[in-house]
Length: 86
Image 1 (cartoon, rainbow, N blue to C red):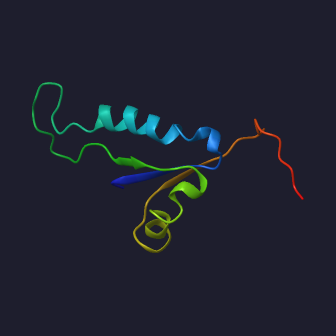
Image 2 (cartoon, one colour):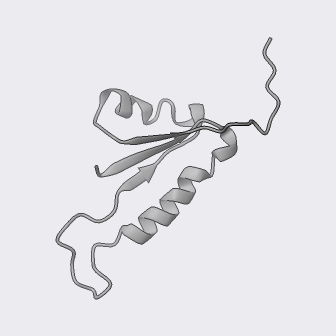
Image 3 (cartoon, rainbow, N blue to C red):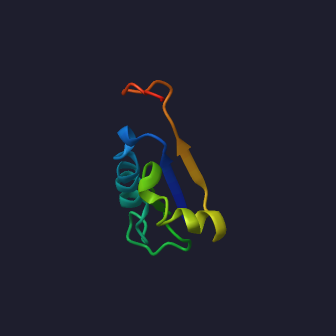
């Protein structure tokens, strides 16, 4: 797949998707080998994502009704913030 969605469920992970973007796309986004020879295949994938509702209307529509995009949903076991339900 040419793209991957990284969708943290917790706002505390808001910088995780940009971190993966930097690591993956910077390293794997080159169109030539280490010797400078053009690759015979597509290099890298497009990583994108936002936590929770930040990306809800911008790209969730594409994921839901558009094209097939692998998604990594990321949650946490124990919240760093107390949760109060009324």
